[in-house]
Length: 214
Length: 214
Image 1 (cartoon, rainbow over the protein chains, first blue to last red):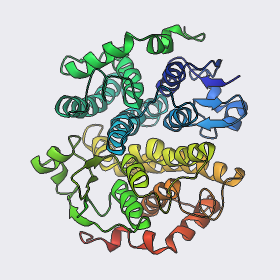
Image 2: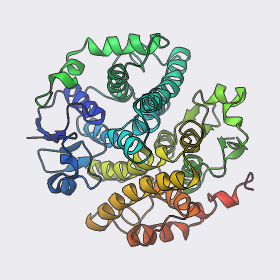
Image 3: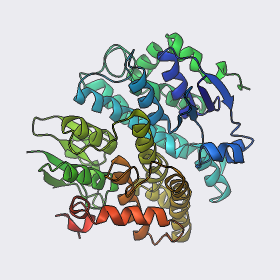
């Protein structure tokens, strides 16, 4: 059986759950409690030397880290339904949209980064929230512009089926709402996320639906 | 002609230069001066709404952003020599190694982030350097462990030819050295980077070799 080592609130694990669900794959979940620090424990470090989640162990024992690499692996091994369009330019567009989230927003608002701000830089709660929202706004401003102006956008980020871009967008919007970011300036993002969340694959991947949710 | 809108010191642009050189593709360079703020100018925002580099405009007018998405596009359109291995597990490994740099190290040490630390959080020079080195060390510790223990590692990060992982590693090590990080704990990274930098494709992509280098 495929096993996902994740955490209900980790947006990287959330991405992998969506991808597994879209592919219709069965998987066990093995929670790694990030608040209790289990990611830095011996068992998780053996799987993931960065001390992070997710790790996906496939039914034939392949051990995979980094959510985008995992999603691309799933897409290569289980091509239907595809998570990337068929043409190279479309694939580049989807990957770029995914990377706005995965390389420009999420890394700055990770738990370990927020902890560093508080513990090492002695940033207060208001400044931490301002930091969080600043990187959300920068990234979402760009995503809204791209998604509004580019012809590739459909019901979803690219065309009328969910892709890797939606897989990244939905957990990031979930996080933004958890931190009470004002999203009224992003009607296109909102429309696409609502479209995604109407699908069972996205609903079942939501943090509140996971076995370790508190 | 393919045009790369970049900046000599941008490590994301540096990645794309390496990929273009490995593929043997000709390209023009159109510098966007990040220190002068040209990335936030109208011309660059039209190309890249995030106000970043690089953007690659191909000879048939396709406009691409996000360095990893650009490299994958080049690899799909110009398959030889490949930047990813042939097997799905190998491809996932290479992408994951690349993403340790592109999703966990580099986003935290970007110019815009360092500026935010200084301007908004009033962090002093020492604390800024400590921040920079902290994320390098976390990421390089993990990379050294992965590259040392995994059988896939060869002369390069994966096997004996350069891949997307090396394309990300070399600019990150260049940056680390520029910020005088102590790299003595990373002999495997050092060995691989030396191997890469013996190749003309990497040498020609180095920041000091670019037309806008100062």
